[in-house]
Length: 208
Ligand SMILES: [Zn+2]
Ligand SMILES: [Zn+2]
Image 1 (cartoon, rainbow, N blue to C red):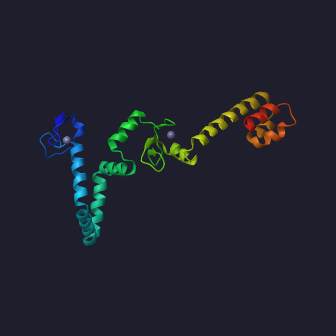
Image 2: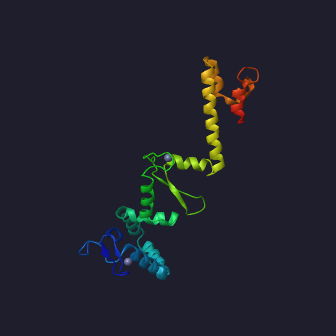
Image 3: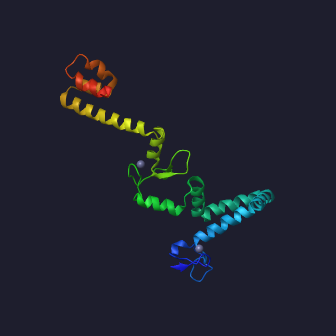
């Protein structure tokens, strides 16, 4: 625990950034106060800062590029934090808290392997509202269904219907010619007309 020298609030040590120059190894101001200070400073000196950055880029473009490269390597957490803030309005800490609530698994399929692109921060389309953390596959899945609950529900019904259908056909038929029919549901209805299991087959296919 440590008391912030600015807001005077006693906080857990995780509320302070590391600072090797301090005796206890942590900043005298809490993260919140530092962040507020930076925001205020940036707003008040915006034009000036942009101009300075432009000049640095113009005077020595190579050095400038290297500076940003080094920054990305040395402060990956800061980069991640500002990306999350910009895209979803949340900090790394908030992201981690949310992921912890999901037991560090995909919120839908529960995998612990997000895929090569890493975890996706799923948000409500066109907003910064974060819904959860998903694996690439589940996030793509939602996108392909246009985030439409009705489509997704219909997809579930569709799968259930076909599962039932499979069970019915499998239990009633032994011949391999029927497997061919099972794989092509649009043929079911036609073929179903004339044979004994028309009720099952066409019923399942037509979604009654
Ligand atoms: Zn403070
Ligand atoms: Zn998933």
